Image 1 (spheres, helix red, strand yellow):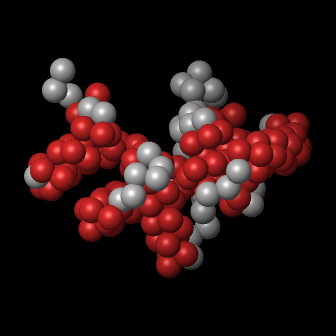
Image 2 (image 1 turned 45 degrees about the vertical axis):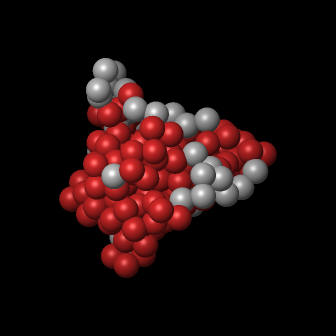
Length: 178
C-alpha cells in the first residue's frame, strides 16, 4: 500500500536524500500522531502538544541531513520530542501532568483514571517518563534505553522503582475512594 505509516524508515531516509520536501512530508505523515501523543502525555495540554510537535518537526527538518543513523529514526524522533517537551514545560513552568484526563483503556472507570492520574502527577519526572514510555506508549526496554541514553538495566530498575512508588501513592487514594 502507499500508506506512509507502513513506509520503512530506510525508505523515508532515501526519499529525503532524493527530494527533501517530499521525503519530509512522508516522515511527518508517519510520525505525526506518535509525536503529538508523546508531547500530550508529557504536557497534558492539547494545544501545547501541537506547538511542541510543530517545533519537533521543524528541528527534524533542519537536522535530518546530519542524522547519523547510529540509532533508529524513531528513537531519534522520540528523543527530540522528549527534549522539546522538557524545554517547553520549563519555559512555561508547567506542573508536568496537572492531573487532567489520562488515556487508559476505555473500561477503566473515570474514578480510576483520575486516581492514577494524580499518582502519576506526584511521581518524580525520571520515574514518570519510564512509565509513560513503557505502559502508555508501549515501547520496549531497549527502545526506552536508547531514547533516554541509558542502559537497559537502568530502565528496568527505574520502572521497578516507579511502579513501587506509584503503588505507594495510589494505595491511600484508592482507600479514600479519592
